[in-house]
Image 1 (tube, helix red, strand yellow):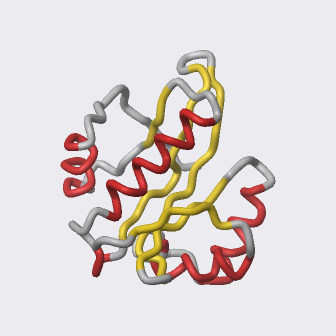
Image 2 (image 1 turned 60 degrees about the horizontal axis):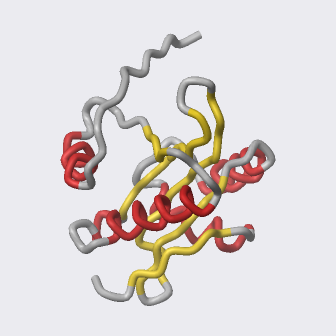
Amino acid sequence: MTDIEVRETTTEAETRAVYPVMRQLRPHLDEDDFVEAVGRMRGEGYRLAAACSGGRPVGAAGFRVQEYLAHGKHLYVDDLVTSDDARSGGVGKAMLGWLEDEARRVGCKSLQLDSGVGRKDAHRFYFRERMTIASYHFTKEL
C-alpha cells in the first residue's frame, strides 16, 4: 500500500467512517455505541486517528497523552488496528510512526501500549518496531 495518510479524526462523520476498521479490534461495540463512547472519552483526553488509503480508512488508533509518576509524560495507545485487507502493507508502521511523531510533538518521553497475550501477530510487529515488554498488566473483573 503506497498512499497512506494518517490524520486525527475530530467529527462524528470521521469517527463513523473509522468504525468498520475499529470493529475488527473491538467487535463487541456496535457503531452507535462506538461513536458515543468515543465522544465521552474525548472529554477524558481520548483522541482517534485514522490511516487512509485512497480516502478509505484502513487503520485506526485511539490514544491519550498521560502523565504518571512511574513513566512521566507519555502517549498511551488504547487501540491500534489495521484492516484485515490492508495487513502487511505498511499501515501499522505508518500509524505507529505518526503516533511517535505526535508523542514527540507534545513532549512525551515514551509511547506505551498494552496488548492481549494472545495477539502474537501484533507482538511480532511491536518487536520489529523496536518496542519492548516493560511490565505485566494485571486485571480483576468486578
